[in-house]
Amino acid sequence: MSVRRIVFAPLYLLADWTDDNPISALGAVVALGALAALLVSTSLGSGAISGGLALDSTTAERFVDTAIERPAYLAAAVVGLTMVLFYDG
Image 1 (tube, one colour):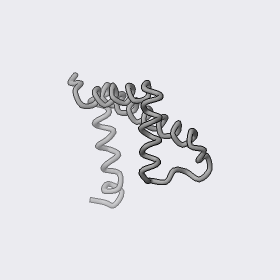
Image 2 (cartoon, one colour):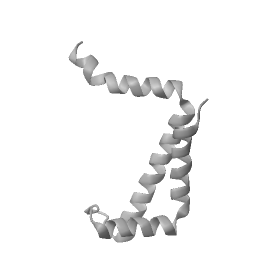
Image 3 (cartoon, helix red, strand yellow):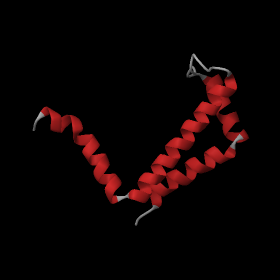
């Protein structure tokens, strides 16, 4: 195998899986997007616009508080994850 084939093998596997399971792939995109939006909302709510978030218990508490305050993000993530795990079509 060439180096190029080894490097791009995960990308080819992902493309094949996406081609075989488009609904599950959509669910993965929805779940990741919802979690990213929740994380951005947490960082903007804490005032950490330029520095980012530290990975500590305070950040985890803020993340949980934001998820409770904005349940639509959490619901979208759960629906997307459900689509990935349980859709068989």
